[in-house]
Length: 80
Image 1 (cartoon, rainbow, N blue to C red):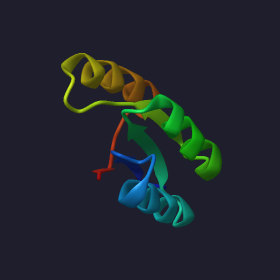
Image 2 (image 1 turned 180 degrees about the vertical axis):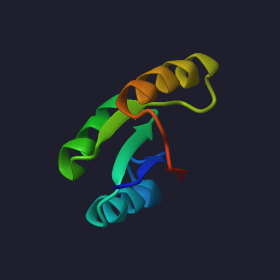
Image 3 (image 1 turned 120 degrees about the horizontal axis):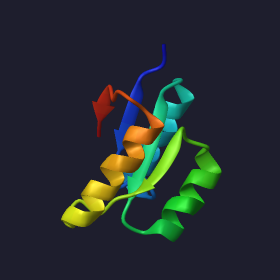
Image 4 (image 1 turned 90 degrees about the vertical axis):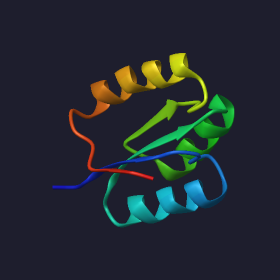
C-alpha cells in the first residue's frame, strides 16, 4: 500500500522537489502551501493525491486544512 505523505511548502523549491520525488516513487502526496494559485499550478504539473491550502502560521487555516486532509485520507504516514 502506498504511503500518504503531507508536504508543506510544496508549491516551490525544496517542497516541490520532494513532492515530485515522492510521487515518482509511488507515494500518495498531499501538497500544501499558503499561495493557492501557485499550489494549483504546481499540483497541475505533478498530479498529487491532493492539494490543500495551508498557512501553518494561521490557526484557522490549519483547522480547515485538517478537515480537508481528513476527507482525503483517514491516515497519514508522514509529514515533510
